[in-house]
Image 1: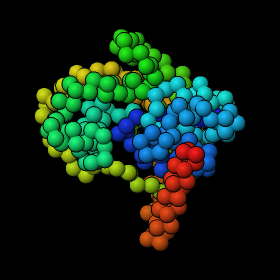
Image 2 (image 1 turned 90 degrees about the vertical axis):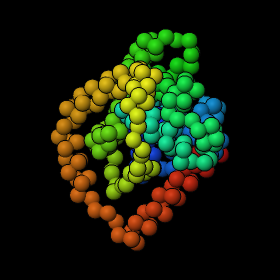
Image 3 (image 1 turned 90 degrees about the horizontal axis):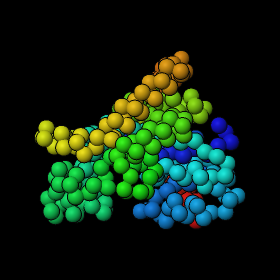
Length: 273
């Protein structure tokens, strides 16, 4: 496992930001390539053009990227991801856009007063997003059942850990067990404190438009349960240790926060140059 790179396929709104902060504690910021075409020019295409020697030295590739980037890592790679219940993920993504004026869709939603149902109709490319990410298929003409089959096959064959957002601590312990991580005290990032009640009709519409994600989520939960059973003792021991971690004091917390921000900034720069 140490010879392979780790690819974190970060599906939006699945607790990936919290996991990213933990990943940054495990590896040198110079050994992580973060794909983020919005904040810095660090794209999948740029990664593919890097000299082979630099690509070979990478320990982690992460970001909102579809399956397939492993083909450009000469050292080989394994994937990890987090899946989330599709209705909750879609709603979280919608309200996230509403809270972020810098998001490309924010002002369109505000100006045209677009609700969740409107977005489902107007942005079909965002439906079944988890399935699309995991399948990594660019052909939009592929039929639904084939897309789902490819996503399931990829999860089974290429992912060392398939985590579940709603069971984040157990997912984290599976990752720690698989990759020998030391888990620090952490706090969940970007968690919305409140959310309006949603009309049952909107929930049904989300489910209808994300049928593939619903099935993939159930399939992923099955893989997750299998992994938990195989690593039951290590996960249980890790959870006990994790829950004993105390929140750092103000000085230590400030130092940790500053160090974390430094790692984050250094990695962003390293991924862009």
